[in-house]
Image 1 (cartoon, rainbow, N blue to C red):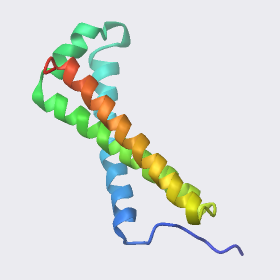
Image 2 (cartoon, rainbow, N blue to C red):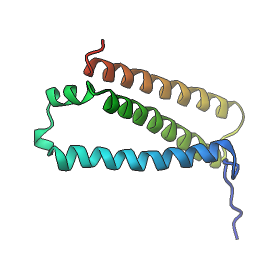
Image 3 (cartoon, one colour):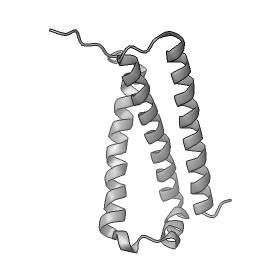
Image 4 (cartoon, rainbow, N blue to C red):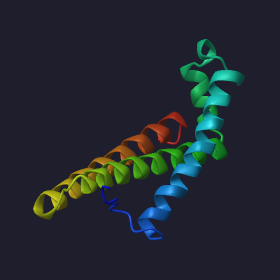
Length: 121
């Protein structure tokens, strides 16, 4: 039988954060789908309505936290999947740096867009 390998240490911080962000994303994604597909149908979602929603501080903070959480969860998941496939040494460090920069750039750009949509920039 094949040995099971995981780059996550069971009970470790990375393992815990991956599970906590997954749980948070499930809840916020359900909220997002409910609001934008059932309360407001796709045809009714407009730029002006999006701006109006983003002006609400609670909605704004929820969406920014959604962005940060999704970026972390995705980048961390891709990195650990690559480590599980045998990524080591210098390549591991380079991949970590590239994914970290890509995640930070995604969060920075997304936060900027959210601030503009909210009318705060």
